[in-house]
Image (cartoon, one colour):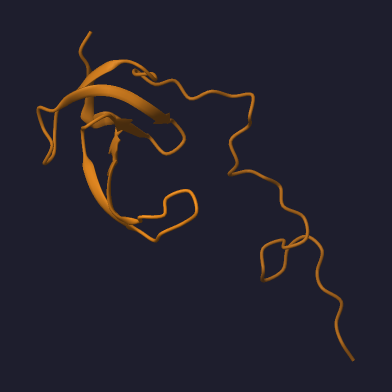
Length: 103
């Protein structure tokens, strides 16, 4: 009466066995021209000309977080760690091709 699910293929594209083709191996590294702690300048976009230190590099997504480079105002709820909550200013990400290493 009920058909058994297909193991490797079918309409769902292999729900039981995932091959991991799209995953990045933890042993492989993506080379970037900037690293954490470098002084960079944003060369394109609305925040062009701003300089700052790289706080975070996400090579898989091609994004970097520059200190003071792209401020974002985020609304947060009160928590035990931050009982006030409210509007917080955080540093947003910039695409890695939009930054230039200064020195």
